[in-house]
Length: 469
Image (tube, rainbow, N blue to C red):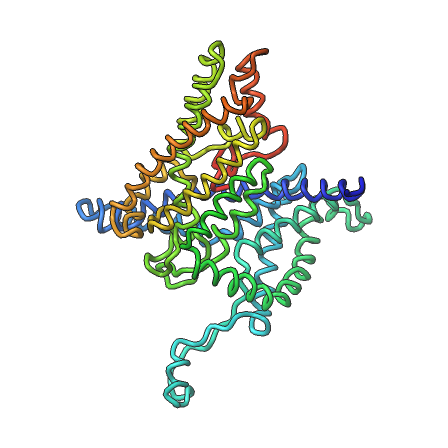
């Protein structure tokens, strides 16, 4: 049994993890814009293979949209640095964001400088071929090898946390009179720049270990086993289990933005499932979409079955109120993929039922991975993203037939949710919405669905997605 002091420490760690999770919402909120611009700018939409084939003036429009979307995707680390700094610091202001931006500039400059000593080497364009042939590379116009230290979004998150901590500590600092101009908030970017040098040196020294653990071991596992049904099951289940605690953003950031790799149109190596789905070249990896596709049957269909079960099992006097609320929450989940309001309606009052929901979500990811169905999203697994990316998903899956299987699979899950939830609620008398004989049903539902706001576990984007969370 833990001591009060250890429990207090655990509580502080948990609260910090929640704060970090919430701070990730702001940069993730930029993804819908990037996804929409990238998708519209692709050849099969407004480009040469789509509307641009008939309306040639749309081709430069498509190029502009694709460039705008790529600008966001290519600079995700900067977005995370700024967003985490603003979200993690209490009473943050513009100086927090400025400090994070300056800090990340310094961080990348120092890591680039130290890359030849500690970074990963990329051989020159013809060095391997020349060496294999036993020729002297000096006689050939080979590009020199390059070196890189690439922490991706994790580097941005680290700098953002550093900037937030330094802001909290120094935004009210008073300096001697002759340095008074640099006191207060003006001091935060200065100290952040200095500390970012130290952070960059530490990260550079640690990069060989990071590269081995994350890129070679975890990244290699994703590359080799990302399509494995078991991998999808574990990720989907844990993703849902972490939502009531507001910690799912921490898990999501690894497979969606950091692990695994593919190649974009410029030939550059990019990382993460969402990043590769939005801007990767088809066929440069075998796992794109495997950490996203299985959410579509659950968010578009299964939770509608759960909402219907809540309505049918509500007490007769409460059904009208429950029905109105569930229609709203169910349609929100179906159209946009925003599931938290509906999930929070039973996550706390009927925790065993929520565990079943998490396991079924994991089974959905396992099933679509087994069937080789590949889709993705820039916001969440709702109908909007499903329809917007239908053509791209068909190309990844080997035809429209597989992608359209998401609909019958979702309908089967909706039936499972409806009958299983209805049976469990009645069998174990679970206090789901509308089951309280006393008090107002509308007040009870409002209290249940607003529970996360009280606990500080909001959605992945401002007002938004559980999965791009």
